[in-house]
Image 1 (cartoon, one colour):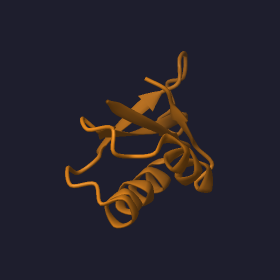
Image 2 (image 1 turned 30 degrees about the vertical axis):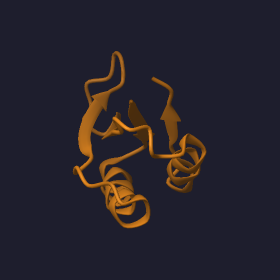
Image 3 (image 1 turned 90 degrees about the horizontal axis):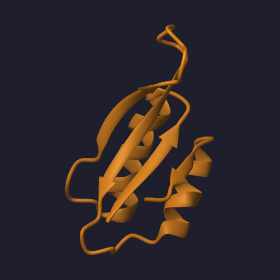
Image 4 (image 1 turned 90 degrees about the vertical axis):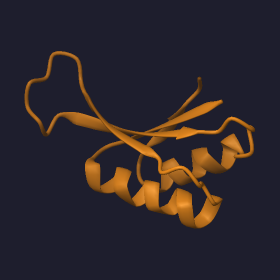
Length: 78
């Protein structure tokens, strides 16, 4: 299973990645990915994705939803 948390900026994505390690005990470092919005050329117009591999489905999606929401983001269902 893979969880993708969508955040409004890089700072929020980095903070969420740190929180995943501290709060959820994620052992593999979450992947940060810049996701430019369609039709936008400006680097400021980008969302950041935090990708968390969860092969054992150990992480509660509702808790991940709450974490993303703390940073004005959300979790994409995969």
